Image (tube, rainbow, N blue to C red):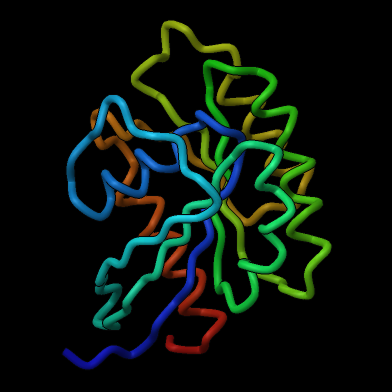
Length: 174
């Protein structure tokens, strides 16, 4: 298959926010209940078609432990888009969004970033309202905000479709 574009996507945020389960759900269509902590960085590939444009996504999943944060600037180089995740059942993970974003802003990369609240299937244990997540995204001038469930698959495809559309527009593919 011939691709119209190859886009590197970075997924970052606190440990346990759902980055790995989001990636795996999107790439394989399955949910892994007990995923292992990502050490450093892991990556997956996925082909996607948006409005007749064939794209290969290379999805970089960064370990969320603070001890891995220092590697993010090196690996973000060449990224065309990002997903910044927090856990809707953990208020402190939303509070840390600012710190994660400041690491990205230290680089020369200017990429569209979607703020994503993960674990929507645990809505009854919610600590962060949809409104609060949306307000943080607006305050940080992030391009888009969504919530998802990697367990049920809710909004998983939509997140990557939206980000791919945003990256394709920047790359002037349409």
